[in-house]
Length: 472
Image 1 (cartoon, rainbow, N blue to C red):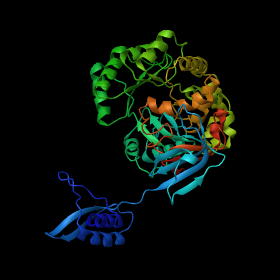
Image 2 (tube, rainbow, N blue to C red; image 1 turned 45 degrees about the vertical axis):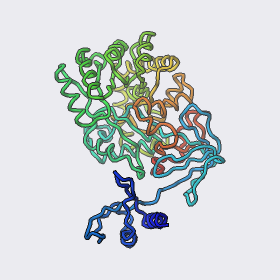
Image 3 (cartoon, helix red, strand yellow; image 1 turned 90 degrees about the horizontal axis):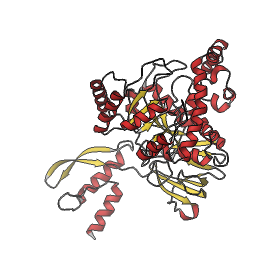
Image 4 (cartoon, rainbow, N blue to C red; image 1 turned 135 degrees about the vertical axis):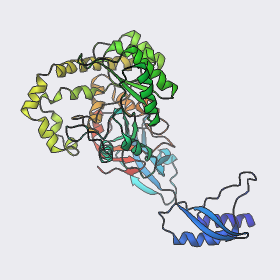
């Protein structure tokens, strides 16, 4: 009887009671319940922890009281769910979200929705996992100019990504303190913008000793991955030599960090794989990949990030792109930026650029290589390299899915590369990438099925991050 009375007091007070470490008995004083109940009636709900003085049997003591707010429950009902796995889509499905994470998902007839749960009816809609961009950038660009990194710009970019259904972004370079602060504050059920993971500064050491130092500097920043460039920018700059990039990779691995590599040439791709690189951050664009490269990728289980829209951005502004008249695109772009990109002199300059034409040719190679690698079973991670000027965040990710299908992937393969596999490749699959219990409730509600036509990825009805509807 006494035990039952104490339990009722605990529930009424709403207090989480700790157990004694050694005895295992509940640290609960019946006389404290009355004090606690009175105090909890007086406090504002926004205060999670109170320090209150109470008079105990032995005199005055100070106790920390954790006022637990009720779980926030939402049930999204009657949707067709494509969960990002290889499973068959679920018709008439229900997703129950508790405190930002998926508590249950499945056919509505098999999912119990607790009483008093808020319901959101999604009849006729298709739900997919939030897209995961395995190679993007944030916070550094305003209009067509770089060098403007700020907390305000980081937040703006993360909200823009989310508005287009990209709910997780892995930033591969130029990340500063504001980006890491955004990352470190995102594990909350109140999140309403894209999640961010960050590489910090891209490393460009000139010696083996400097390579080790720069890795250590980035590790001290608590980066999520190390990024290097092994590229001569079509013969215009010096390329990082093998002994230095191997030193970076070795030191990063000693410190428990993976290494992503920007590259262009097949020879360099083989070289960095041989040195132990973990993530190929761009397509091989100089020649078709061969069986030796495919074998290396599979043997090391290294992921390949095509960034096809990055290639498009290098030449497409030689004329006015068709998407400049798309209302979905126009919703999140500065009109001044569009006008600048439409300037005849700028377009003529790009049309006459040898580099632009070289990258245009490289896109055709990239398309063939993507298809060949996908067919061989190499894991593909959707990425776009968006964030720099004229690489439009969110919209380009939607176009990337269409580009992958044009290269020969099926809509399902394209979607999985943009959700589950992108998350796996960046070691985030315990949090995002598929719609499964205990993962964040990050998903996109579409007005049409992207498995029937991948362009339906643009027909967004709503986007949710941690179960919160994103402002679009």
